[in-house]
Length: 182
Image (cartoon, rainbow, N blue to C red; front, side, top):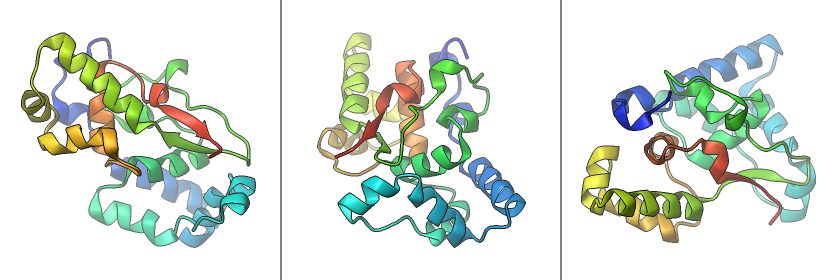
């Protein structure tokens, strides 16, 4: 995808249902329940999780994502790591290359989106194009406050919006994902 700016937004939306089908294929092929998949995903960061005493991702999170057609960008990273895929693998029309590969991390880390970096790149590109936040929000198909509040967010945004933003700024999602150790 040479020029993301010329592509209709519907064509660059992250396909949550395709991600679910990929997860379900792996799950069924390995004879796992959805809770078993969630356990395996969580254990990929077992050392970090033990230190942090976090609550694990639930099997229902995986199943409900297909029903809702939505998931947070942070939850999707658990799934992508388990599958060994990049976010762009689930965006129709993107030719995935090495630049899309997510960082490799050990059991002492977890993949996380840096929403502050996403916001900074979005604001920089908005300024470069001389656009208002309202115009950018209209182009991305979201509310203005969804974009301007990103600089204060602690947790996540929806994966479809995250991927629309990275396409709009013309960068791979991997540029905004890091290996967190807290």
